Image (tube, rainbow, N blue to C red; front, side, top):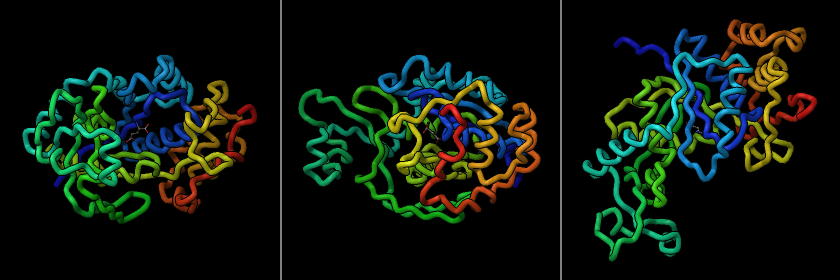
Length: 305
Ligand code: GLU
């Protein structure tokens, strides 16, 4: 069977400006796509206005530009895709692959985190209680081959893990939107942080329920701070300094297990990226063998971080 053309993407949630950890992910996905001669897309996963400062999207796109990471197609915004998510939900509901859940947090706790069976069976609750929509997982072990980590197996527990795909507040959830857009954009390869590894078996089931073949996944180690916490807005990760993009890229390559020559530290962005393209070896990431603990970027962070 003919392989479809490689299409990768970087899909940040705009909860804050780009930090070093997200640059490492962006660079790894860009290098994978470039080395495969494929397309690299950027998708802003702006599904939750309550967690997204309005300036974050502009800051992220500006940072990517400064670092020479230009997408091959116009940037996609999930905030403009609600109709597609609604259509997917209706499709899943009509096939019995999703259900309305009116459980309050308290009720779920009383059932040890499980959904009382009446939710899955579609019994209407009294009154017009607001509801979430959940994807109905099959109780099974998901198998896939991670391009870095090798064969993976993940047990999915129906009901206990059933992900919310439409939140009670009316927001479409990440688990659904990421799959709908990966299908719609013809994404063949997903490169992302290993903090999302646990989501993979669930997403694999959503792909199949929507009649699509799941992409290949490659999970890279997450970058952690001195306390061992993943760099994120919650852990107060500093924003990237866009005035020293070549230095940032140099350190991102090091964090990905590569050894760019020191002279590149003062080179221009194009030269660092060109070195990355010529020398990219996916397996070098594994050689850091810090997947379980993440990579400590402290030694990599530029001086004024
Ligand atoms: N939007 C997600 C995040 O920023 C990433 C989605 C994905 O790569 O699957 O964590």
